[in-house]
Length: 369
Image (cartoon, rainbow, N blue to C red; front, side, top):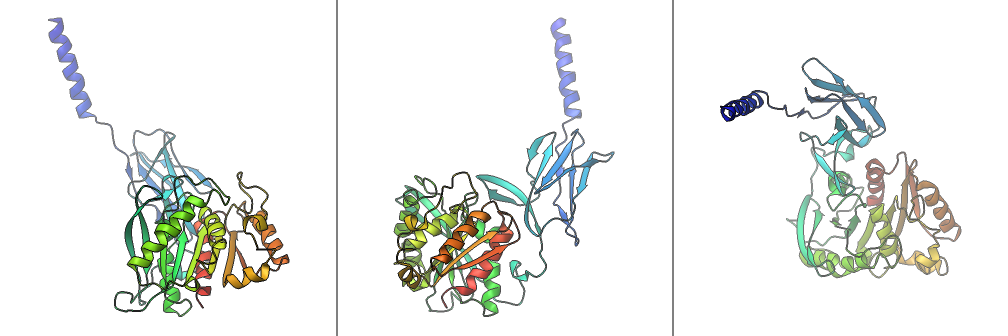
């Protein structure tokens, strides 16, 4: 009898649980308003607290009687703005919104348009290029790797050869970053259509290479080998490109800026244009040391005229609120005092994509002229 009663109790509990299942939270895509405020909405009746972090804004979402939580931000800065929703202090990604690679994981973000930057958006009425997925086997990495390659409008219908920009992502992103977060294809489409940039191919490869050991020449050797042994040869085998150094450029942001500084500037036989965006090489990060440009790039001070002749363009940029800005300004000032020819630009912002979009927008028109 006791066993029978116990069984009835268990069945009653299972039935009750089936009648009252735990509610799965329902997320909604954020709504960006014309005044640059953003509204967020989550339906989570069983949550006791829901909050949000959106870049430098933190907010406690307000609950309605039906368990709908809402919050509207103050006006956000233009650009790609990361946000995180916390349900009872657990960070939960929004499955109704895009997840972007960032710092080894994935994050949600909203896009706040910036007035005066139409080239960051895909425009109607102009020709558009194509982003291609390319796989290759790397003996350096011992694995199959991928790169994203932009070819300009008209590539497939022509026989002409094109110059190439090798464009490297930062440490928190991958080979998709410059096209997804950076909007480089949109920017270049607009610049080519307006005659401000020459048609070119842009290659974004995976900059994370086993064995790389930080911001120094020795630590850059695995990536340098990957670039010279695999990335460039794969591109020159599969695409119609101009193979002379005069038609190769290298640029990158943050980690990719360090790669461009070391690999680009120490390989004048390979590259003639170099862009260094928001790198920590010059200072402003914990791993940076007192940089001696002559030691890192032999000849930049001791044979400056030769160095200047080797490079048609050296461009350095940084965000004006980036912790790297003071070290960057000091190094640029020293380089100019030694007679190094370079372009230097700063933009409002921290270590963020709006700075890098403007960097590439200003860099592209100077290439291959």
